[in-house]
Each structure stands twice: as structure tokens, then as C-alpha cells.
Length: 408
Image 1 (spheres, rainbow, N blue to C red):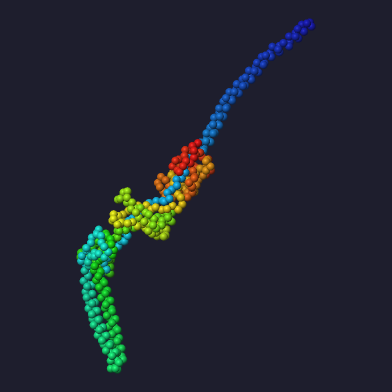
Image 2: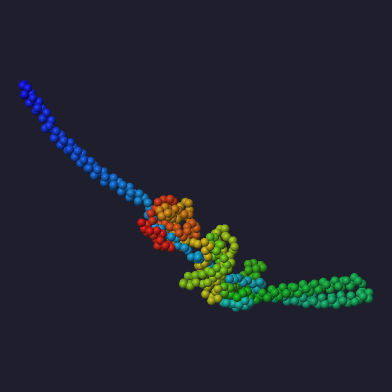
């Protein structure tokens, strides 16, 4: 090979790389583009999934926070009206018995008759008592005759003793006999008075003004005063001008149940009407068995409309010592820790409060302690609610004194 050929071959050799360089740059570019496309596709698939996961996490956290409805407690009335059952009783109620034995001669009143105090109700024949009285009067006459004779003898002996016409012993005997006869007269007089009083029991009189509610005898019945067997009740009388009702006030209201409180009585036979009564006295002691205070309510019955033995509902108006609040019964939570209600504090945290109930009003209850007027009480709280739990206030309930929060 000549130097010129070698030079020509040498000059062509370097041209081969120059022809391949553009192809290499194009491949790199394609690779870069492919990588970018893959990265874009990957990013396009990952980002939505990340957003979806973030949205799901946010939604889960939001759903984990319960939405509650709240209200402010209503302030109860200054007086609490409690309704208690009671039975009407006559102010005075008495059976009438005989005080002597005999047979019923006449009766003058029957059931339903209004009688005055001292009015004659019946006559009893007592022949034995009459004979005993006659005998006692005869014995009294004999004792009085002996007494007068012994008096004359004693006076005479005292005069004779002054002249020593009789002995001192005879005078003392005469005076002693006079004193004995005087005592016998007093005994006979007492016996006559006893039998006269016993004879006066032949007539049965009304002990007070009232109505005869029972007659348990008739003409010719044998009357037993109870000396030789069980006594026979002849009549039963009840005073109806004023009636009394005994009711049992629960212990929680016992301090407010004081005399002169107003009470209204309602009856099924008088729909829509209320009869005024007054609390007049209390037992002053809580019954251990029922934990109630026995009180008496008197009601005027001058019209005679009310009948003893009737069932009544006594509406007793008791003043409130401390302000009471009214809540719906659905706000109560029954837990082992006691009766509670849920409240919202700081606008987003739940707090459970132990409460004490007063009167049960049906769909509502009276709360006497545990909450205040400014508390936001949760209506229909979830069963899983605990203190410190995050909550969200929903629409406010208008049943309270004002809105408890704004909708969010």
C-alpha cells in the first residue's frame, strides 16, 4: 500500500463514528421521553389514589365526630303541682251503740236522713232497768225514813246527856247510828242516779249534726249493750259539712308541704270542676315503709255534693325551694354511675352531668340539681357518649329558652 492509499484509508476511518453519533442522541431522547411518559402515567395513577385516601381519611374523621342537637333547659314554674290519690272521708264518723239492754221500741230516722245534734233516733224498752229503778227509789225512801228517825234519836240523846239522863255510851251509839243511816241514804241516792242514767239510755240521740249512713236495727230487735256479748251497732252517722282527705306526700316534697297550702280536688264524676281544699296538718314524721309524709287536706262540703268514700286526685301546689329545670325525657342517660345528661362545653366537647329528678311530667322531666340554665344539653344523646368526646353541634332545638348553637 502506498503512502497515499494509507493516507486515504486513514482519512476515511474517522468518518464512521461521525455517521453513528446522530443515531445515539436520538435513542437517548426516546428513552428519556419514555421514562417521562412512564413517570407521568405513574404519577397520574398515584396522585388520585393519594387524594382519595386523604379524602377518605378526612371523611372518616368527620364521621367519627357525632353531630348532636342541643337545647337550653326550660326554667320550671315557681310552684310545683303534684297529683296524689286520696279517699274522701267524713270529718266525723261514728257508730252509735246502746248503753242498756232491752228491745227496740221505735226508730225515727233512716239512711240518708240529715239529723241535728241531740235529735232522737230511737227508743228502747228496758223493763228490767225500770223495775230496778223502782226498787232503788223504794230503798231510798226507806233509808231516808231511817235517817230521819236516827237523827231525831241522836239529837234527843244529846239533850238527855246534858242532864245525865242517859249514859255517854248510849249517846255515842245514837250518834253512830245516825251517821250510818246518813251514809245509807247517800248510797241509795247514788244507786237511784245510776239507774236513772241507765234508764236515760233508753233514748238514742244523735251525738253531732250529720247524715245517717246506716241503720242496723228494727222494731223488736234485742239490744245488747255489750255486757254479755258483742254490742249491736244501731246506727252510723257521718258529719259531711266538711270533709277530710289523707294523702301521702313523697319525701322529696315533704319540706314544702306546710299547713295552709292550697290544694285542688278533682273527681271523675265532676269532669272539668275543681274543689278547693286546704292542707291543715301533717303527721310530722316520714313513714319508714313508704318514705312518705301523711298530710290532711280539708275541703268544704256545705253543698253536700261530695260523698265520703269517693276517690279523688289531690293537686297540691308546692313552692319550689330551688329553681327546677324542665328537660325532655329523651335527654336522660341511664348508666351504672346514675342518672345523667350530656352537655356540650366549649362548643365541641361533651360532658356528662349527674342529675337529680323531681316530678315526672310524662314526655318531660323536672331536674332539681345537676344542671344550670346556661348549659347546652344534648337531646337524644348517643349511647356511646363519654365525657371529653369531640362533638359537632347540629341544628338547635327551639324547645328551650333560646338557641343553644348555630348550625355548622
